[in-house]
Image 1: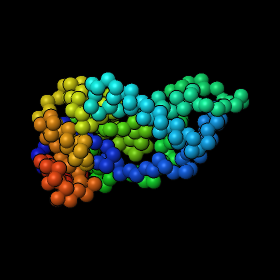
Image 2: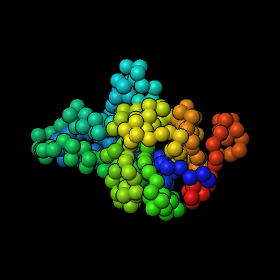
Image 3: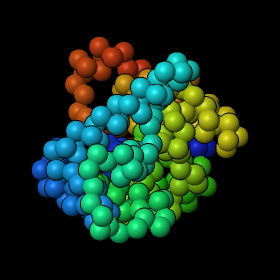
Image 4: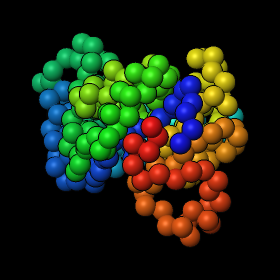
Amino acid sequence: MLRYQNYIFDLYGTLIDIWTDEDKKQLWENLALFYSHYGVDYKPAELKRAYRRMVKEEENLMKRDGIIDYPEINLETVFLRLLKEAPKGHPTARLVRDEKEWVAAVANIFRIESYKKIKVYKNAEKVLKTLKERNCGVYLLSNAQRVFTVPELERLGLARYFDKIYISSDMGIKKPDPKFMKSLLSAEGLDKDKCIMVGNDLDSDMAMAKKLQMPAVLVNTFKYSKTELWKKDNQYPVITDLKELL
């Protein structure tokens, strides 16, 4: 594998192996209970429906402009709307003194209850550590929600290896929109030809790199077959273990 000055990593499916289930009954039961402590009354199924409706509304608002091809909403807005726009409530409730802290607490409950698996891929930390020791730039470019991702990066011990973290919920755009990568390259003053995108998704990571004509490598955690790779016209090297980057 050729060496590059800068390595730009995807996160989920590339460095972190994660499986979440947002249909879990316990998730919506516990989230409804949490909201009830702040004066609003949802049955679990009602809360789930309201959440999904508001997600769709927020997405439609962003798409209405027609400027961004792949918009990314910020779920913190949805969690706060669920509190403020609840159709039913009761008088005895806790006071929300700091909305940002409160939303973070809701998001933590939501994310933790959705977990079925979360762990760092074998050799991921070793690769990041080695790249830093070689004085390479190491960046994260992730389709994700900051309120979920930053605590996970810190808890799993990966946050310290990145020079800068770029998350789609902050930017309002996501891969494969090339503007997401361009924002990173511009902010960091990087030459795309001296960078390599490391990701696991043909339709986002590799598609974006292809649009920008920049180097990339596919970490095949999705286990794409040779036929699938051919049908997607993959032009990039394929690896099965992150250590092959070194």
